[in-house]
Image 1 (cartoon, protein in one colour):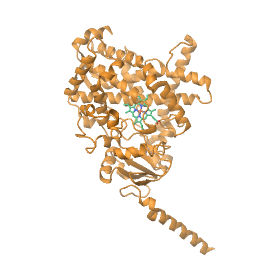
Image 2 (cartoon, protein in one colour):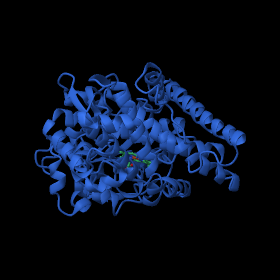
Image 3 (cartoon, helix red, strand yellow):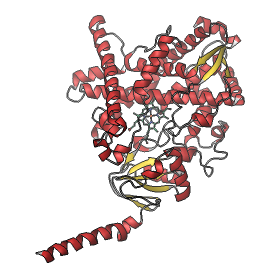
Image 4 (cartoon, protein in one colour):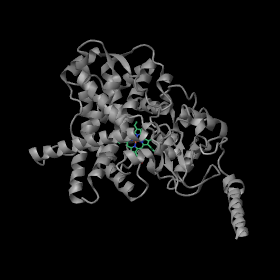
Length: 507
Ligand code: HEM
């Protein structure tokens, strides 16, 4: 009996030894720095994870393999490896992992940016693309965006009251983004025109930012070292549950207001809104469109459609304020193509290539989702000739690729012209310019985002003169989480352009 025990024990150790030292697949894992037992490579990521990952990739190559506690993580940082991940391995990496943020904040993974790859994800993505984000539906909602730009410009003009005024652009731009998304979802404004820029409007935007722009990482220590979750690491879970409750309450109120109005005013209220569509789908397919699924779709649009868009508009304004020659060139383009007798609108955008280049260059330098969203592999595969086991998290370092001197000339300089010069249009930047991701999980809102950003930025430049307040340190404004630092609003002095006063006062 005792002999048998030793026999099994020896086999067990031989297998472990084989798995870790002789397994040919393991030996073909991508390069990796020294790992510690239990924590793996977490010790490397204490500060500034993005910059650390970027310098590790510079040292070990564009396919890097780390272990965050118990989780294997693959980090790719070159156009060819991105291409491999999102062409031949696209389905394998089309999943998202289950995480604490996913458990707490996604209505049980029905919020489809975090949903597992499968039927539910497919149905919800198809629905929002068809109803909201396809070229056809974007065409149908172009009047909403045009109207929002008129409201935005008119409020800012009134706020200036005929003189130069210091404005908190961060707050104004967030007001524009929240109002636009709410108009599309529910047909109403969250901040009224009279309140915009005033104490009440500012407080409202701060409250909304507290609900939707929260600083919760999509992956956190508790995902890598699950025992931390049991002991309540840094109150993370409580914070997430609080945020979820606030979002839930916000969405409940929107739905309730909508239903109430329908009862009061009848069937013809606020047609062509997302809520209207969702509620009629609920009537025809109640088993699928449960209350949670409806809220999760609204949540996806609020979470993905407000923060990224407003952050990009702010970066673009920061950059053109810091580069007056770009501001003048942009304004000249708008003046020639649109003139000063009307406000720029969506039908002008195709005639404004420099505006488009400024936005692309902003997204190249300051991608709002610099590591994209984490993907998760469901099968073994190879990337860059290395073996990648299934159940590996994939992070794509878009930040590093978009600033790689091997890929871009003068990568840290703001030169929108580079996009004008790229031959082959979109094809010319494939896999080296990836602010919206690639493959089947890429951002379906890119078209809507580009239109909203172009309109907001274009009208700010068309109608107003701008002066920086002090010298912005662009590098310092970008922190390791790659959000504009929370308490660092963008301020600038704004005055209506003299040849636009008449137009603006008639809006
Ligand atoms: C500047 C603006 C935006 C940027 C830079 C951006 C970027 C991204 C990125 C990098 C991803 C992850 C891609 C991946 O996992 O590989 C993503 C996903 C997503 N974005 Fe955007 N986004 C923006 C605006 C929007 C807007 C306006 C909407 C919709 C209203 C939207 C909806 C989504 C959705 C639903 C997903 C999840 C897709 C999925 O998992 O299937 N985004 N976005």
